[in-house]
Length: 204
Image 1 (cartoon, rainbow, N blue to C red):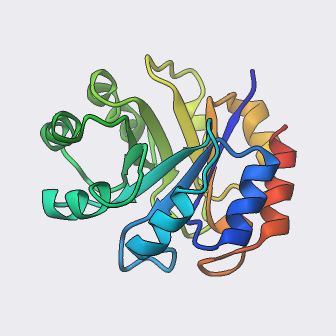
Image 2 (image 1 turned 180 degrees about the vertical axis):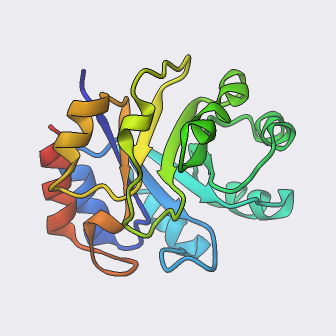
């Protein structure tokens, strides 16, 4: 199985180019002001417009209002919405109906119960994403918690992934996709093109 790769928190043309040339399938733009990876809407539009066919732009939001979503989605070409907050089943359903875009729903994992919380969402979302409780911090969670789980939708593994440990993570779990952010940075919020290339190469 070929594992697809998502590079999240892209903000510059050079890291975008490194990701695309190395074979990333998803490019994540963070629309969450408190994050060091937050991107302004004009830059996101500029970068998203350069994506080749087959590479999908993902807009990451945390408990967004309709106004926040509409401001971005009505301006920048975003293919997929990633919901990274504590969005309820009802809220995710509303967003899906209103914007008619595929949805990735993130679930922070500390124990088996956190994974079980994803089950009701499977009928609505297009992807499940399992992250550490401190997303974007470079911390991983106990990947073995996911062993034995089967999902009706494709899923992504995130949280503390690096070029050094990604091979082991894929071997243990065989996720449909992996999502990396801090693991390919030279400093907090700053992506390193060579680390992006190394990470994707390690996935293959």
